[in-house]
Length: 412
Ligand code: SF4
Image (cartoon, rainbow, N blue to C red; front, top):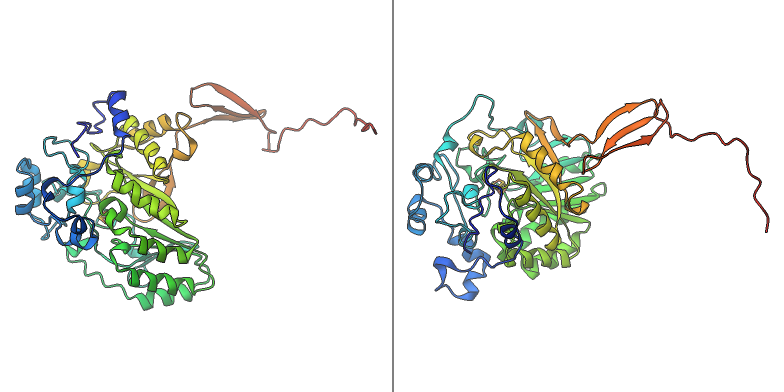
């Protein structure tokens, strides 16, 4: 698909006509792979086998690599993870250095610069890991990391220390130990399968894990965190959906950042999951040059609803080593939230969060709508800046005036 030449850069707000075009659904097309048969192109294993994983391949398909990209890509799979599915590669606009898809998946040399406040494990997951591959940071739920592989690698990944083993993390989860831990902890009612990407496993392997977890009586709720529907929609086969629907209640959190990622292929894949009764939520990361623009974000969240996905979280980008060039500011994030709340459907508004650096967990961050509290009530402002007072007693009790006299009900 050709770019709409909209980068999402905060410096250049896009025209509304461009925004309308962002909300249109297009196919990613075939690009360099026109001669591949339909059945191969739609085969997720073919897509994985033909991923772009080296600087040589990148250069062949995209001679317009910038010096920063070229220098970054030469480190592919030594220091930096690199993989892009042919399908997703077709969303890149090679003529636009600021293409928001390009910034998400093509390595840049800036990734080798680490600021003093950046971390390899910014969410402190390793410290909260009672057994390898399991993170127990919140009281009633665990993160079950099943693999270190993804269909493609994001340049700002919170788990870049781990994914693709490019930095020698040596990730070896032992499913029996992870499941034994959950079985032995009755307070765990919610299990999130993530990684890496769990949907890279075969249907049989995903089913085995879900079945083991479902057999634990205190596990009420299962979730899968995946970017596969965005990077590799071909993986969302009818057979996969038929298998997943056996394990309700099952939620799937997808990860999309820009409206151009929501193609007709992605919409169809998400529709298949929704038709299988799976609740879909989206997690986005606020990224400079990608989506740190209120109008781009609005187009994205509205388009997600059209794909039957509830925008769930908008993350302030974690302090991942080498991600400074992609991080936007909290100020910008709050500005964007201000321009969503009240200005569009409430279902379209995600919760903006900062994952507290070092392992404090998710902290919701909101524009200030409560202006003051006094003895008479709470003073609030609405999305238009108008001020209102909600009456409340001084100790926070509801303001209910005592009636002077009690009216006798009239009998009829
Ligand atoms: S898909 Fe998720 S786990 Fe994989 S590289 Fe992207 S952000 Fe990281």
